[in-house]
Length: 341
Image (tube, rainbow, N blue to C red; front, top):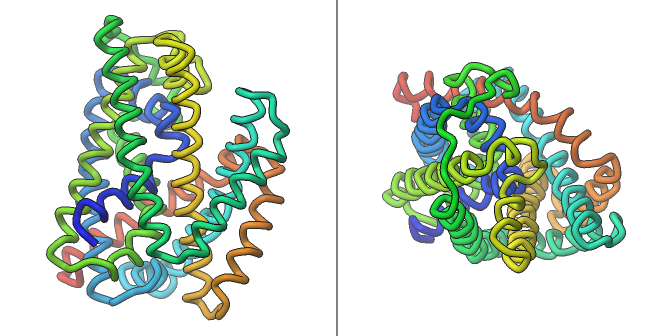
């Protein structure tokens, strides 16, 4: 696996529905106005440096899942805590993506909620059953399309509408301090990406780890910047929209809006594949023997859990993964300072 493929796997894990919709960028960066650009720079640095530490640790340990890395850098007690939160979140993230598909197709095309949920569950399960190489191949093919679509809509919007650089609503942000917001965004996404980055290390060489990790982080940072500028070109309406990027696409043309809806579904797919694979792979590493049987059971359970609804799942699980992410970043930093990575 080349450095660019590793970068694509990293991007595909992070650039899920929240990123491609513009909602995550709005919450963590746009609400902070010009200071949001500083938060974005901080997040990009976190995503680059700490992803490099994750893949280095994975390579050093020859780990097949993120569990051994967590236990190695955080110790047995704290490592188990972070591992448990992350593993549970991977299942919840899978359910959330299935739910997001049902909600998107129901809202945009009037299809039954259960149809979208079941269709995405079957598609994701088929990809995961193909194993790690199947996951890497699927994500690697879709990521360039996702980035081109996001950058295309952003560029078309920015050149056709003025930016409101004076816009800021920090009181509406979930994390009101811009610096902490950037750190939270980076830690939240990194701990999820670790579930796929660690096993992916086995498919490449040590010298490609650094370029892959930093290239992925840089692409994510530039993509987030493009989305941020797009939202600033459409505020205040864009800041009130559930899917700011879809609003921007609709302003360009109905055809572009329809195409971007498909891009959103592709983003949901890449995140769901990464979450389900990471969850099943971690349980296999903990002692379960049948990857295929466990994958089917997990996909079915996630589809059932998806009936709870997208917003309810996100509101329950995302804060927990954010706190676990800070613990993980701190553990990685200490391990690096002590020369253990």
